[in-house]
Image 1 (cartoon, one colour):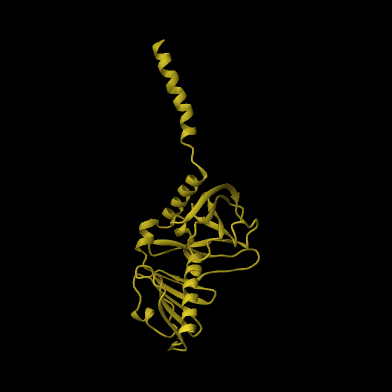
Image 2 (image 1 turned 180 degrees about the horizontal axis):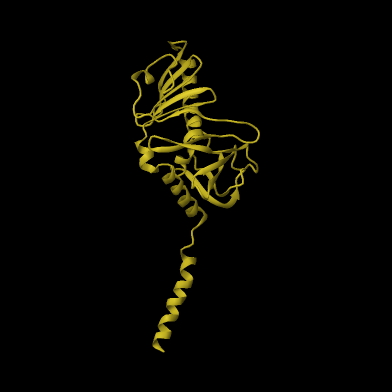
Length: 244
């Protein structure tokens, strides 16, 4: 008889335990985001990756994450900036621009391009950045018919465009981001675009994806590299350099 009375509250606790441990949409989104980052090389892999190089929309760039240096070039135009101070140099046809207004305008452009172009390359590693709000939206199929968990990504007054919003599809089998959608405003009901995030390869300690295509257009990031070292000229040359 005594054993029966002791077992009742124990059984009740076991029944209630899953409810008390249920995750909120925000907690579930963060858990999935951590799994994505782990599957791409983890925080250590991201931290150990010093240099990244890639071509985006005919723009070639090299980023030294540890020294906060960013080199951007298109045709004969070259900008080399510090991503913390936003200071740097701009060259046209191998000659440094001296006009303060034109130079400042191009430095600001280069800084904005660093933010935009790097996001197209490494967005999954930014899912848990300070100021990022993540919410779990549920399950959906991607445009390729694969089941995925969907996260909503908004921003708390960080970056140059905090009004933006993203939807991010995380493939249930791979545990990797395989699709994303961009909303110019968090209030928008429909995205400006939805594209794949696929074709992963290993680059040093991390995984990165190159395919950003959809049914309307093919779009691929090319010349992706994560070298352990780079030539000294990379952050000094006033003229376009060879791909790393």
